[in-house]
Length: 303
Image (cartoon, rainbow, N blue to C red; front, side, top):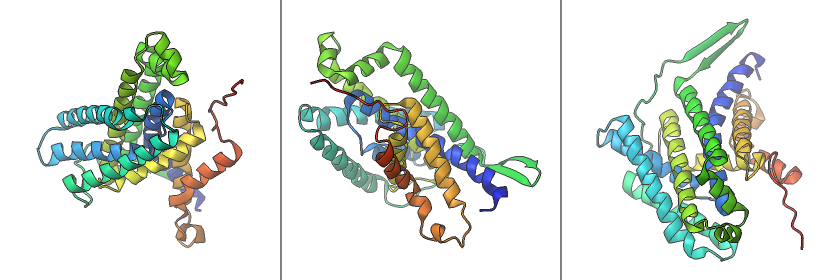
């Protein structure tokens, strides 16, 4: 690597990792409250992004109203998924629930192709396209794309807001209590099924925000759902139950991926497409050496 370009790739990876962190947050929210690892999160993200795109491009609505409608659709989608697909599986083996989320991902993929088409669509310009230039610092100059910068800022504000929500609000505390023990939560008067519905709605809103941000950066098509798979290594790296872990994991995955992509064109590793699989290499290493993640909780049960 040309080391003069190292800061450029590092900062670009950091900004991209902020969006990964937001997507990872949705996975953590669901797992913390329901103990379900949601493989359909990326497809909810894609649907939310498509809804916002359709209302802005085809209906001609302004940004704020299109985003508001996308959020409403996300809330309804989250409630429907929890009520119709997952609530009947309460008490069933966890494998059944995992397979249901996989089935949901394929169903949402098909719906997106039927309704919005399979072609990549250009998202309306949400942020100024003029790049921000930092430097020069000696021989080093850093060029930042403003859509990426604003996406990072919005993602970090969203992550911080939800972290505060979980820590200081009654609804957040109820969700954390439900995650610890469903029966105990019911015994103190918490409506566990209602909390599950709220959890899925919040996760769908987070996914929609990620879909809009990613769409503004690179456009939108049904394959956008695959980008969310890069959030899985981020979640496992930081810990399945840790919001700070989702942030650290997302930023780490973004930086590592960007640095590998910055290898010289003639480098054999780059020619092998290592940048695309780097997040999953990170995931395998974490599972081998620290399965609970950096900030994950190791549970010890007494019999």
